[in-house]
Length: 150
Image (tube, rainbow, N blue to C red; front, side):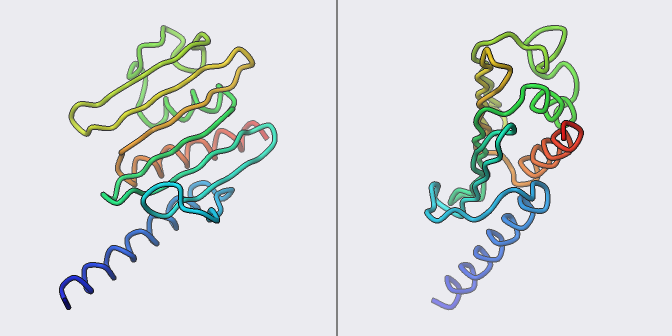
């Protein structure tokens, strides 16, 4: 049982470190009153910027679900995180994507992404089952895009 206890303490430390990284990258995140994944959940909401949550599942993978975020901010974050030409939404890249739904699945990492571009210039999107550092990168890029917007 000592081995299980040691592992559990290490796992708790990892979850705490992940939350710290998420909030360092995107300071608007605060702990949710109720866990909505299988691990720690952080939420945020800011008028004009959107709302959403970030959580860590019981496999140590991160999920981000944001609603009604300005498309320009999402486009910048995607370009800075994954580079140009990664997504197939057209020559103007995601910042110029037409309204509609865009789905991506990475067979190598099993991650999934879904982006719903709305007519009002906002995006509701989810990036699921990715490494913590990937979500931290996206959060940091979104924070930088919002700083430019502000």
